[in-house]
Length: 165
Image (cartoon, rainbow, N blue to C red; front, top):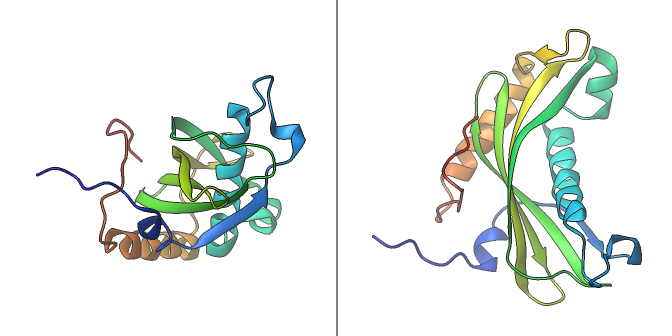
């Protein structure tokens, strides 16, 4: 069966985790957003998601725990230009005791189009040992709850198919 085309109203079933207008500093010599800032935008959405589940800055500072990106896959669907208003949405794809797999969506609200997706696998890390460590139980439970909520969405996540948490 063919997968139906993802629509903006599908993505907007997720929580909007970050929004901003594109500043001049994000532009490259082609006068559109440089690829590094697509990653930055999705990262800001993940930072907010982590804050909501209890893995934010205060958690990291208190427990010397952090999160490392292990793998990323970007798809660019449309240009982002100066002053475009963008929103970031994150879908949880999978969660294991130490890792989480996310799909970030950058929606260009100015042009009413999907600008990019960024698939990310991250690992919870003990910063003293610089090694993977289990998520704290409360945060893991919140991530698992989000995963179950996102699995009930009426659309299939357009993942690349080679990444795993």
